[in-house]
Image 1: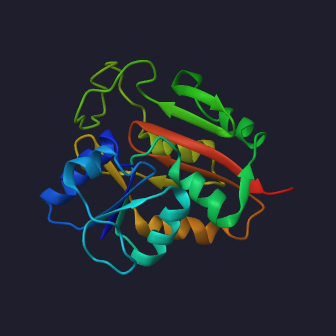
Image 2: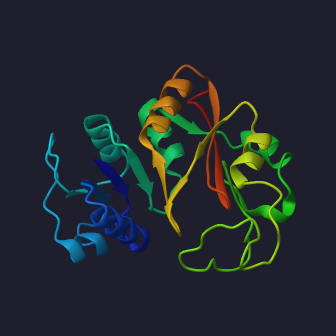
Amino acid sequence: MDIVFGGGKYGLEAARYLMSEGREFVVIDVDENCPVRAKFDLPEYRKGTRKSSFMKGGIKELIDVFFDLQPEYVFPTAPVHMAGALLMEHLDLEIWYEGIDSVLSGLPVKLVVSAGRGSVVVSYNRDRECIPECRAPDVCPVTGIKKPAPMYDLVRFAIPDGFVIESHYLQPGLGAIKGEKLRELIEWAENRDSVLVATACRCHGVITALRRAGR
């Protein structure tokens, strides 16, 4: 089974894709009337179920379902850096505001969309809307600029001691994270006092700095 974290516009795209592939999934959203639930009328999730369903909740609920299902893919469609939020909740970490300064020094300024509150968002298409169902070619179809490298490689350069999760394209415009990479992230971070974690695809990325509470 798979998990769709966020039942909005992009969660709806993920649900449609999974249904077209005959895959069962769980959608998690704070709004029980979110677009995915409204469209497909999914039943409430029950522990141990192997059928497509819905759970009202956020990161705490994601963690419970994640360890219950051991999903192959997780679709991070909610407007939050899911990997960073998962570590904060599961390992009791807090935002490391100063930690993001070292990250900025390793990134081209022209790629930075926003920086602050412990996170940096980067994109090859910083100032304009992406086209629907983009195939993420080497030359951005919006800006016309050739990408020097996939964004996940640039992020790895910026945080050589951090953990970078690559988002995999399953169809044009739709990416997902492998569940096994999230499990590796948790194991990697559980004994560290501070962590830099990133999620990135070929075009976009987000980096979050975290540390043990009180450090």
